[in-house]
Amino acid sequence: MPAASNASSKSRSVSPIELSALQRWAAIVGVHVACLVLWEAAVRVFSIQSFILPAPSQIVATLFNENYRWAFNTGVTALEVFGGYAFGLVLGILSALLFITSRKLMLLAFPLLVTLNMIPKVALGPLIIVWFSYGIWPNILITFSLCYFPILLTTIRGLNETEPDLLNLVRALNGSRWQLFRYIQLPGSLPYVFSGMKVATILAVAGAVVGEFIASDKGLGYLMIQVQASLDTAAVFMAVLLITGLGVLLYLLVLLLERFFITQDARIQ
Image (cartoon, rainbow, N blue to C red; front, side, top):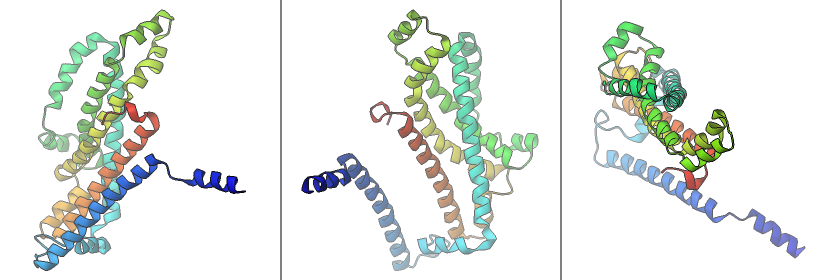
């Protein structure tokens, strides 16, 4: 019985890796909570006007104002962020595969994509309104245009980083083009793909908000413009926090997928 009890206690013990992860997350949460407490205290001690810097409690109070339609506007922005990001991810990876398999296409089309990517997306706002009118789809398009290129670049880099010896080995064994990609190039390129995906998460949020600033009648970005006119700074802060939450959620989703598909040693930090 004592031996069984010892074995059971060992099986329930927390590993050093899990303990380190818990400590890291506890530190992250603690820093955020401490900042909120200091923020609240500073506003109250120095009697800062709410239209200049509202306290966190005042910001949270805006959630109970039905006029802002937080759930609806957050849903619209989330659809633009995740929709544009998904399109950029799929088309970015597919385009990289096409460029890798065709040198002529790489020579002719890739420089054009670089030039198009240099165009400021804000400058395209008036044209997007003319071409697509107002709505969710134009904002998804703007989000896609920002996410597409970094994913394309990192995927091409990852596919090109495959070790030549492995490629020659598969070819010597009469492996097909699909087998070469499936078992050698794709696993080797995943760290680079996820690196581009992380960068694209930031750009996805920026693209959706910029689109709502330019050509939208709904969403958190549109709401920010409306409440800013009345100096409702607390509502502006809440909209910013919700937008940030969408970005963090998307980033955590990418981290979860990376943890599932790639080992710790192979990840690009």
